[in-house]
Image (cartoon, rainbow over all chains, first blue to last red; front, side, top):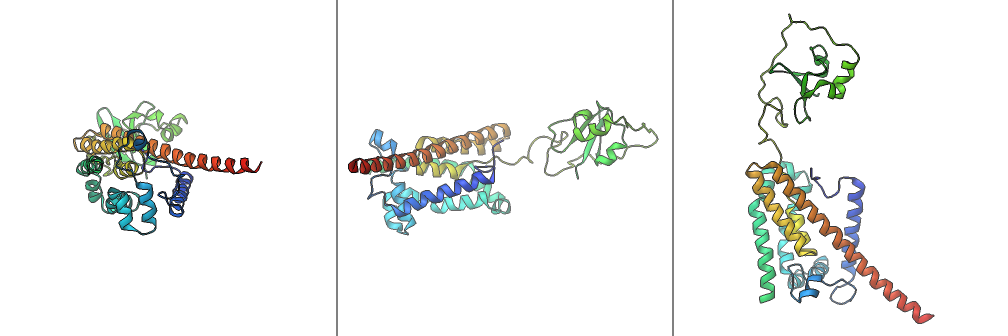
Length: 130
Length: 176
């Protein structure tokens, strides 16, 4: 059976959260567009094309500083998906899951999955064409 | 309180509490079922029943007392009983959709896409009644999300560590 969360034991969960906070702090203090020690996107390195996730480190840096517009410039899809992702995480990992189970079903449903798939693919193609 | 059922011939009897069950003519090979068991099993394989079965305290069969019978329809709302078709009550497995989207955006396009496709499969298989298939898709999605997560965090941390070690050794080399 799949575990309901990423980590079943509380220690693993806490360690993971600390790691994420550490990475976020690192991305807050250093601007990936100015320093050279952030890893490049392997897909772009190999193909020269931008993948749907390219620019997410620079985007995250701007987001953490509250610069929405500059963040949008680096990765529009990431900024646009924030409302969906935040709602989704709240629905999955808080008591809202049981309170709004019908909404949860639709939110994580097959239509939603297909829209997400389509948007990622279209965005990936579109950002290399225009 | 756990409730128990047992079979007498083809008749299902119950629900009983464990205490009530002690006064029933349960033999080691009597088929019993309780919440959490996939199907009817021999009484001797259920630890809490076998405890007093092996204690040679098998109560005498008293045919003058008819067993209490309750309607067998849906004794538990939230669980599967062998009399009830598997379905409707089974929760939908986790689809990992949002996690997959995050993975796609933050690192690994192929793993993220695999996760999103599996998320879609979870829901369509679940609504078609293919619960095992939905669970498989959910496990797949979970696997790809975790692979992507650990690969990307590992790569990211190692890359930055390698750069800093390189810079540090460069600095020390210039001093010595």
